[in-house]
Image (cartoon, rainbow, N blue to C red):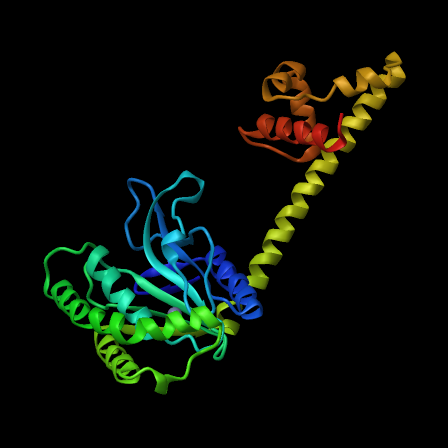
Length: 304
Ligand SMILES: [Zn+2]
């Protein structure tokens, strides 16, 4: 978990950032996704984790994140930031990145803009420190609005043609062929830096918690497998016992596995479930449900 401007980037987002960066640095195109605040009606906006939106791939010098969608899995969701890669540069923001953060904050309120840099192997996020949650009429919002309207015209005039050429050829053009480019670029960066704050973390530090979390996940999975094997073993023994007693055949044995929760409910008596609980070391009010789930899963795993 990494926190910036009170937004939290949880492990799943950090993992996606690292995965997407590795892909991008290999295929030399910009990749990215929206950072989405999935919420419920009673969660606090801005403090809940930012989850990844759908992933996008752009060009060598540009990515359009409007195609990245928030609300995966049917969540209520608001986009509160952007993440994209710089496959041939550092994680510092380009003039365009700063402009889009200024515009985004002006239009939607407090947010972050993050980039992963191939050269510095770091994640860097920018934000407007005093931006309100919502873009109501305030000094900060008005300042961002007027900065954007002053700078965006020059960006279109002097910088867009440079990137259009880069996108067309796949090679970074020669700056000297674009009069006004450098002056405009540096001015936007200077003004943008004055309006924003920045926080950086190396990939190494960002990923340091992942092995621990993965080990936890592996152990959890292993214990699930173990309980599945135990149920299977118990069921085999139980059916085997009956088989010896009553000469049960293979067809009947298969039909002993429940297929649904209801099936399981009617198939096993309370006493049988108690016995199973005891053998499996399971207790608590959800024990029967857990056993039924395990049995249904076992049946589908064994294809019976
Ligand atoms: Zn960028």
